[in-house]
Length: 486
Ligand code: C2O
Ligand code: CU
Image 1 (cartoon, rainbow, N blue to C red):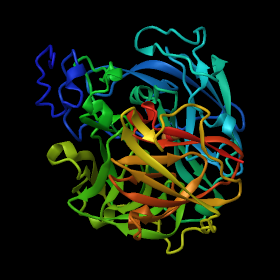
Image 2 (image 1 turned 90 degrees about the vertical axis):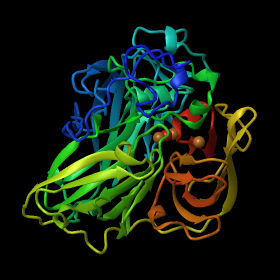
Image 3 (image 1 turned 180 degrees about the vertical axis):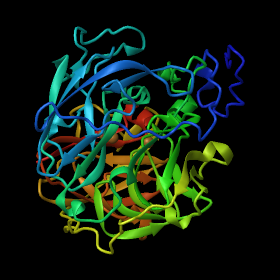
């Protein structure tokens, strides 16, 4: 049943998430804290406000000595970081040279509907054709599918506040394997309010994309191939046994004994994290998914479901020079809970400060309506309000410029993400939310049998948007819904 060729014992690798699917052995587990952390390249504009990026297949070294085929924006994983400024519109031409169609979503972006990365709004590979791609790329076409041949422009007005956003593939039925294969990157929005703050910057500002992957003995990414089989592990969401930060396995970074700003992103398909610092220490949170907080908050631990971001400052002067500080995920015991390591190399001058007042986020407006969205497994699969996703099926029509309370309920952990609208968590099970729920967000972990009330603001644009579970396997199994801002 396990079908392991080669000498690597699958069970010993501690994964077994989709053992039934594997026909190859697994790559040896790399030594933690050997590979240096790298920071994704910043995308260079081809003209003011214009970018071009080509999605292509590349072979890169992720595990030392092995090559991994990735599907990357610009052929890298993570893709390049887009540095955007509030008030400076950007147009990104995405060219597709992959074997599959794609749709790119700027997660957390306040984006016109046409550029939002709707799942059937596709860039078809140059020279390719709409359907009938070979092997695992085979797919059905969906009613209302839009095809752009070879490339398309996405328009981002960037009217929103400074925030840690990310972008990733969002194609119907195929988001999870495409993101697993590498189609994700950061987009950082900056503004004057943030510029004025003396937060750590430059080399002391680190975007950290955390994700998990499994590797075959030849270095390839392992992903269940016959996910139509819907086995139990696939139903729950696919987890990998190697943690990558910015595409490197359990990396190590040298830091000075000063403050650093860490922009943390959980980019896992399905794995939740609970981050802590070992041997101890605190995160000073300065921002949530969609921008700076009014005032900093101190946390010992950061619970992060897929796609949540935390913008935090860590003060490494609290540790002796020469010591190590490990970022760990406490939801997994032992070495498998490691994420990455910092080595406090030397003292250095530090002019940064975390001010008591950070920003003036938008106030909470009064809601004009309440709606309920239930995320649940039914006989037909993972559903929203009892329905499997069908493009164009609208579950809500909120009005532009208003706010609504959306009551989210679930039977499992579902990280619920709303496009366009940013929200604040009002209550969990009728009680005050956790301090880590603070700020304007676009993704919230709705835990098993929980009732989470959020206040969502519909600002920016009219048109068709979506809400969905950001467990990417659940998303591909149709746990999505459309709404239209009118
Ligand atoms: Cu990050 Cu609709 O997704
Ligand atoms: Cu889910």
